[in-house]
Structure formats: structure tokens, C-alpha cells
Length: 142
Image (cartoon, rainbow, N blue to C red; front, side, top):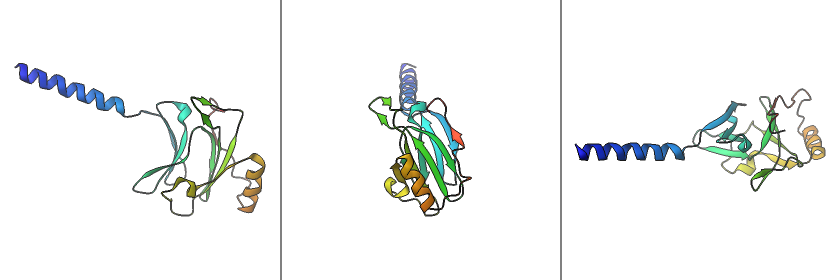
């Protein structure tokens, strides 16, 4: 009986250990097909991920706080995460053309970081419609 009890305790311990290594999703929202806005463990880790059918690829790192999308583009606003702090005094803008297949290299899937001025110029160059706006905003991160 002692061997069975020790095996039981060992299995419970290993299960708890593995479960604690898996991050819990605190926010997840599907964007355009194959893309999602999500954060694991803490809302400050809000990022945009792409799924190419085989891998989940981080495209825009923390802290994404506002997003808009249609069938052709995802636009996003992000405050950079510096050390352990979100730097809310800086806002980076990104454009993600989503017509093409997701590239395994994250930098190939986005245009940015851009200033607001450069974002507006690039938006016109790419003929992104005016009705594509930032429709999802996480106020706590803004």
C-alpha cells in the first residue's frame, strides 16, 4: 500500500508541476482568419499572434491595446513593454496585410513600428479604407 500511495503522491505532484508551467489565457479574441489578440497570465502581455496551420507566430509583441481589422488588413496600436513596465508615453502603430500566407519570420508579417504620422501616410499608400477603424480597445492598457 505504501508503494501505491507514494506513486499516487508522485503523480499528483508531477501533474501540479506541469499544470503550473502552462500559462492561463486571460484574454483571447479572434481577429481575421488565422489571427488572434491574446494575453497569457497577465493582461499586460497582450499581443497579436498568427497561426499558419502549423505554428503560432507572435507578430506584434506586448502591449497591444487597440486593434481594427477587415478581410485585407489588421491595424494595431501598441505601447512598448520596457523591462517590467508598459511605456504608455510611446504609441507604436502597425499595419498587417493579411492577404498573403503567414511567414514564419514575424517581421515579414507586419509594417511597423510606425509613428502616427507615418501610419497615416502608409495607410493611404496601401489604400486602407477610412471605415477600417480601431474597433477593439482594451481601456485598461490604453
